[in-house]
Length: 403
Image (cartoon, rainbow, N blue to C red; front, side, top):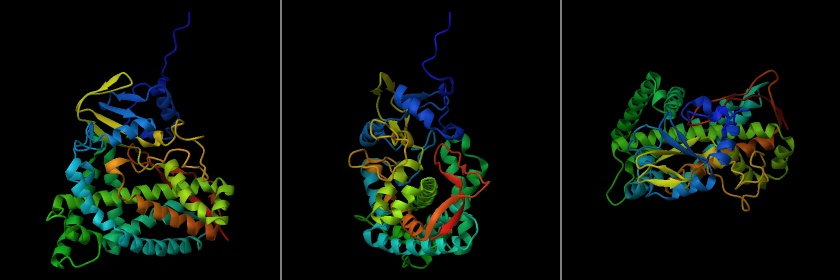
């Protein structure tokens, strides 16, 4: 007599969701959990994971039952930054931080971002082979953020290296290495130097850090620790999201000339393509919330104090919300389907979403109008960042055919 088959495939038993390798090419796994186990307890890390679109929406919106103040990364304590706050404190702090993202500031950013994109594409078209991540997708947000903050040119590569290292620590306590701690300490000293320079200059500049130092609402200002962690968040969120979206989007379009050519023939399609790229790539693997009371879901109980991981890439391919969810389709009609969750939802919706969309849009506009075809470089392999926090292409070697 044959033994009864397990309901769960062996590879999805005792999954460690903090292990970066768990999220290497993860969509077969996500599909399994979407259909068969939409609420999963990760025994290794003592956290829950949810996958379905509607469940993530419910948790994001229920800010009384699920809070951010106990930490948004798995088993990592909160810091004074905006994303770790709840209720009135979050609203106040977000309002102060958003002073650097006014419509006027965004117009200035668009002008500067277009200059950067044009310059980067100019340089790429002079090369026989390019590295899309390094030459465009990573360079654009790095330069734009550095400009926004007024980071000296010579120091920019070093700061970016620190941010890349710090980001790896977001996978969980086991991944907060000596290198991560050293990078954070170096960034703290860098921040302090910038802060003291602004104070000595009378805070009269127009850079983002100065705007934050001067920001005041009803007599309240960001304190020094809040400034530090908003500074870190801007670098992590701004660099990772845009880099992954631009590189991943261009890689998909390089494999589908019809969709790529459609953007050249009709640039009005580009804003919708931006949304599909961000849905498809979904740079952030997850954010976590903590149950403020016992909550029952699917016959299981998330106990007060336990964390729940919101697995955004799974939700972005939930077949209950998206037609042919594993198909990359710039013509997708989001008015008849759901909006992607790559930027989160509710009070903690990503403050930099407009900036990320802007950078992806400008990259598509410039590339489609000036480059006839993007081809993966012969004999070269694509490599992805292995992470349980942020995912995307690490490199994309390509050959460009100019128009």
